[in-house]
Amino acid sequence: MVRLPLTFEEVERGQRLGALLRRARGERSMLDIALDARVSPETLRKIETGRVATPAFPTIAAIADVLGLSLDVVWAEINQPERGVEPASSDRKARERLAS
Image 1: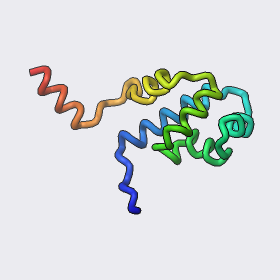
Image 2: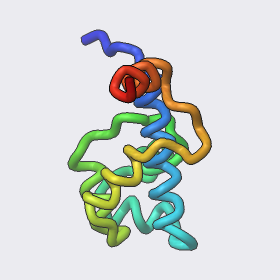
Image 3: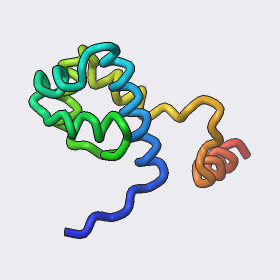
């Protein structure tokens, strides 16, 4: 199976997901969270660092549950563009068309 390259937006979303999970984990050990979520510590590390930008839904659901995050919060957070970041050109063009 050939995997298509990730889009810029997917990479950014993966980075936001990783940052959210790191913040929610706080001072708790990565090992404890991973074991409680029944994922490997390596998987959690890759997600937190953005190396796995599109993790499987059950993996995220398990980690979010252990961290006490609702999936609604996770979804809202990872789909919010970074403040101060210019939207992608296709998004900007679509907004300009709607505004005119």
